Length: 122
Image (tube, rainbow, N blue to C red; front, side, top):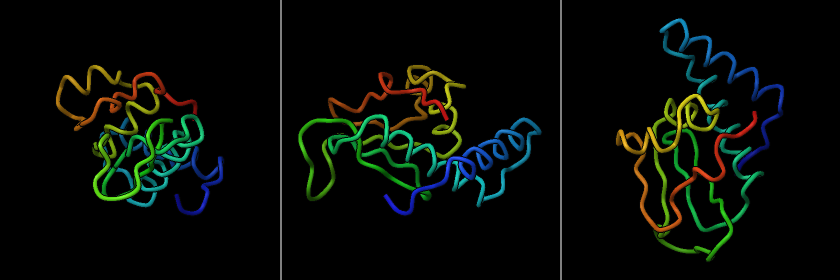
């Protein structure tokens, strides 16, 4: 992952995104990008590894969860979702099972269920 996001900057961006969503407004792209990357960083810290790639296009991706190391091509375990869904499941506003059932998460592979490591504590 790129440059580490400071906890204050990450929380400030996350608060700005939540405030915009609560007001039914579109969050600023910079706030959204920082909030997504901050939460991906927290996931990497909580569940380090290389067996699952979590993608939140276009803002970021991280490889997490202990297991078989992936080195080339598409990893066997991939989780992908949009920024709003990532923020919702990462912060516990929505349950992993609910958004997965609703088809808002695209997950493939036997290790692509993140319910054991979410929500995070930003």
